[in-house]
Length: 495
Image (tube, rainbow, N blue to C red; front, side, top):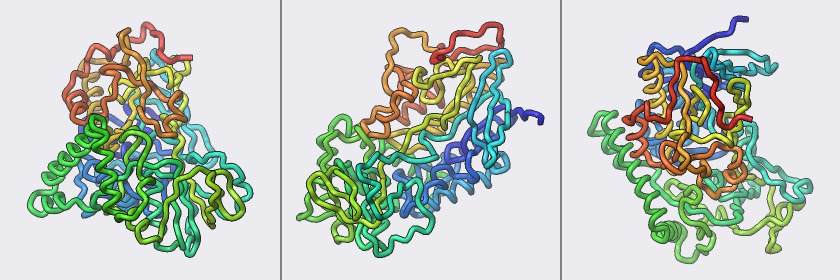
């Protein structure tokens, strides 16, 4: 079978992968490309997760694409609406025919002699190995393992007579009507699930080891809806997008510079939603704001169900599962028919692909992230990595635009190869993600590092990244360009 060749090969047909295809078509129209999608559908996260109430914890005016205005009334959108938006984008912009479904990229191998990648993918249920070649790879596969989430090794779980499920593997048509449900966790998934399950469940208990910072925002953006009535959709979208970007940036900066003020704000929001008699100890985290992600609840829905008694919150540690539920360290027992382990994701960089450069395996943990989108010593490979303190797509849009600038620069100068190289001895390594969340700490050694200063440092700042990625020099002295394969340099991170 002939091996197909493309200028660019994109891995993943989720939110960032579909967006990448559109950017390539608009900015590099002469480039051929293909998207390899491991699953059978477009949408990535928004097709995979099916638990009750699945929604974004970012507003759609910043999570949406820069080129396609979000026009629905709700700013905090549900999963099916986001999935429909991604699918419609793929259809409207002609990306859909470029996608090869049921193609899981497993191994990529770079040849400096040929200045190209060979990509091995497993196709279909039989896992038939198929190969492609390309000049550039853009990995848009996200940051977690699609095969399954993280569930701790709970003591005594084999005794439990009810159902234990993880939100990432939500059973189709699960009937929780009249059931007692315990949701373990206090992150974005838990605070979404709890209010969403109270409509049918007899009672829902949110069991957390420690509290999380929770803020409430209106599900609808009144300013955005007003602007859309009086302005063209594109103009209204741009104004709203920048309004929300600046609000996010301000809140993040305030969290870092005046954490006490933000702590007070979150307690005030909780008190307003829960009433004067509710025990606010469940909403007083031990860490500073944005040491972990701040959770968003639209229209205070979590507070409402806690206040009306259809849900409750318990802060304690699990001693053991029992036949009827969970016994806590305090001695209290929570009865449950269903336990949902909303205990996080298993991080998996680049979808777990094996990376080989000139015959040498690349250990991701020994590479350094360049501008948050490439890896030191790895040629012609970019990755879409969104913000942790703002909407994912804001950074992915910028990364796609920069990739197109990079490709066009290489074409103008006849280069076939570009490789970020750290030659500055004053740059020190720091963790890629500066979070204390368990899902990050479990995987930190396997992730690329970031550097102590530009262009290796992640500033988590959209305005600054616009200057760097949209207007900054492509030939910045750190990116090494080549159109000859006479010498094969040492590869950082090779084993």
